Length: 205
Ligand SMILES: Cc1cc2nc3c(=O)[nH]c(=O)nc-3n(C[C@H](O)[C@H](O)[C@H](O)COP(=O)(O)O)c2cc1C
Image 1 (cartoon, rainbow, N blue to C red):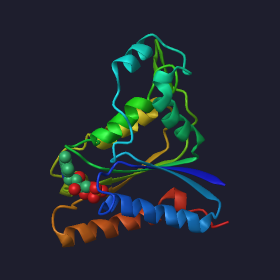
Image 2 (image 1 turned 90 degrees about the vertical axis):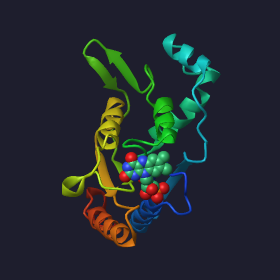
Image 3 (image 1 turned 120 degrees about the vertical axis):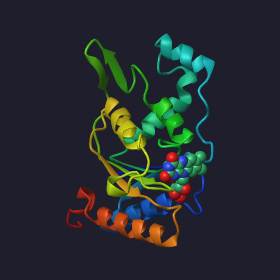
Image 4 (image 1 turned 180 degrees about the horizontal axis):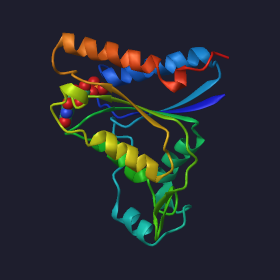
């Protein structure tokens, strides 16, 4: 049995290219492991509530994790803790993560719960597990074609590392707004990259 947490940060599930590719990846894994268990969390539909004054006060006061103010945070953290594999499909919004994914991060990256602050810096408290992040974007931000900054990848790598998730892999679906030819070429390249992922290199059991 492999527990997968699938986080989808696209607001347009029906047409999202990142979501579609993530589903293909999950189907490929499912074909190799019939016992896959998938928890799906759609962030684009506003399922994660905004942080409140009470939440921030509770964080500052290091209120017990059982307090109701942490209910949403605990639910999201427990989903993450249960998972053996994390798959995130996210668009790039203004060079970084969409607000919905940032909100998920603000609930999950919690002092005293998923990381601890020490004099030497922040230390992650979660067990590491593979994380695959499919990033869809209208333009290009990688390699020779890059025409814009990418604050999304370094940010996600850093913030996930803060809670202990270090085995992070990115798959880029770029050029989605630059015409059909560009989008198709980017999709083909992303599929090639997916096929080479360490996740898919093991023999089906
Ligand atoms: C608010 C907003 C901001 C965006 N910012 C960027 C950006 O900074 N760079 C970029 O290449 N595309 C940007 N895009 C385009 C999306 O990343 C692109 O449409 C992507 O393919 C959407 O992913 P999805 O099809 O998986 O939903 C933006 C789109 C929106 C709605």
